Amino acid sequence: MYLRRAEMVAAVGLLGVIVAVVLAGTVGRYVGRPVVWSDEVAQALFVWLAMLAADLTLQRSGHFRIDALVGLLPPRLRRLIELAIKVTIAVLLVYLVYYGMALVRLSDPRPLPMTGVPSSFAAAALPVAYGLMFITVIEQILRHLQGRPESDGAGREVM
Image 1 (cartoon, rainbow, N blue to C red):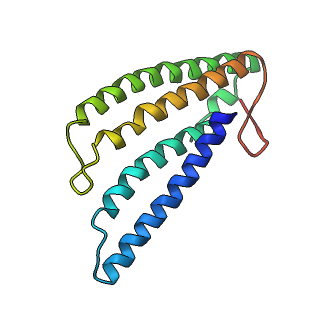
Image 2 (image 1 turned 120 degrees about the vertical axis):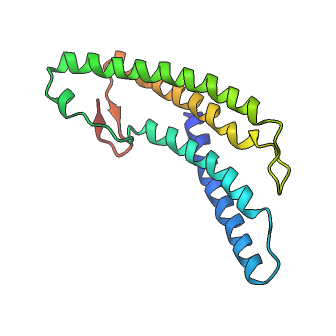
């Protein structure tokens, strides 16, 4: 629960910082004193925001899904298929964390041109977010095994 709250606070904070940085860059260009690093910082922070938002969306089962065929199946078989899908997603996320870490290592030596911040800062958003998504999917699997329905964040049950 605290992790989820921290994610939401981080996402909202990142959005605020991105807006402030882009605004500063825009105003700076308008008055003839450009903030040369603003685009670079905004882009790096946007990667983090997008990846955090992906996990926040997963927590609410908000990602696009086509369940027309699964919805036609008997409830027991439908639950089994849903569980298999969640387990498959968990395995895929472990794979993505592993290769996300490799991407961080590969991008480490190159600094961003304007700030000098290692490009691995933006790349690190991937394995971190995939790890958070893995935690989310494991929680969903446990709820599924306990027979507790998932919520979409708006109070509607999702299977």
